[in-house]
Length: 318
Image (cartoon, rainbow, N blue to C red; front, side):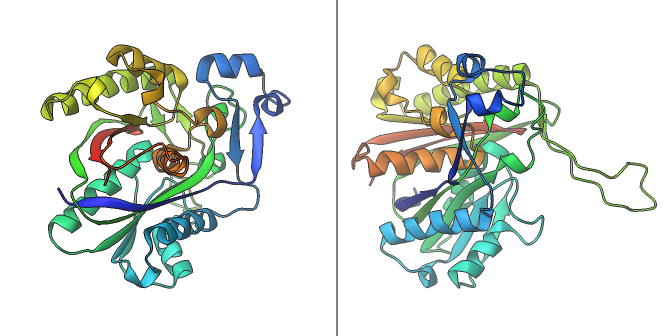
């Protein structure tokens, strides 16, 4: 199809929070969190800005790709919460990189990285770009309710980036949405309009864990089988399954349903938690740094998130 990934990067906050630290102010424990989520630690921003993390990840990706910022034709950021509601995080990164190419954010929650891949593919297909920088970056610590033990223990902050260029790595991509904001949402904070009947004040991310789990497991199995059937592949034919790092129980469900060896479905959520749109590019960069992914191997990516959004892609690594 239209592109290949030629460089990746990642950036994470310096502060690491383990489960015992959360248990100091929440009615929880390391055993409770690990048994239900598989998460041991997560990274949380203190004084780091999202622009800094996103730009650092982007810089690594550009260096590995062997190109300079002026070579970019577009910057796409998948994020829920940059440093501002406006301007976009992508615009802030463009300023840091010293470029004036088009730049915009995509909000598809945890599926955002796959949505940016789809938009980039359209630009390559229409011959409107040679190089596109895509970034998944999230600071969920800013919107989590740190009094809610069922949700705040899940999330971490971080950024992952990829540089795309023309190529034929992308073999399959499918996106969708089941319009339902109730299971996972973050209301916009209200201002002080004298005409509004809604009280101003801080809003927090809320989640119905059971509803999200049911949606995620159903969607991941359905989307995986759809992709494999479309491409005439068996589960064993795929070398790597990079699934959104939300919860170990969800990943274990997918592995068992498809009969996969654990090595094919790598995890880093035990160290970083759920970094939303950043989770797949962070995991991809780690695997590449470790030399695990080799040319010619197939990589299946899938994610789900608020909306409820979902998507899947398959690449043959070039």
